[in-house]
Length: 72
Image (cartoon, rainbow, N blue to C red; front, side, top):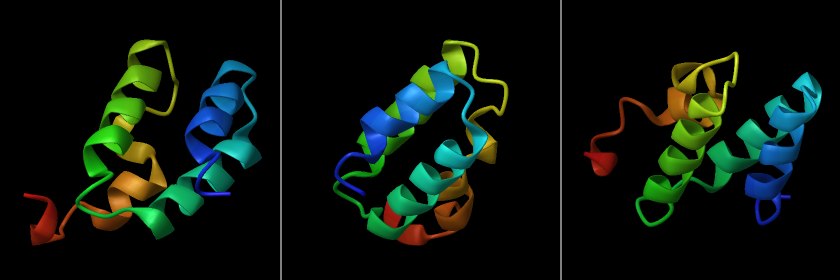
């Protein structure tokens, strides 16, 4: 699911599918690393700018890894 999670997350956001958003967030969290962190951060920002009601900081894949020094 992690490979399809970015596009599924956009669909879930568009149609306000809370359970799918959460599932995608956790799938992305499990696959998050220093190589894909910029793409995931960009996706979260894009969704937030498009009117996502949750805001960037509430996406589980950002919250889970916010304190990891490897992403600084």
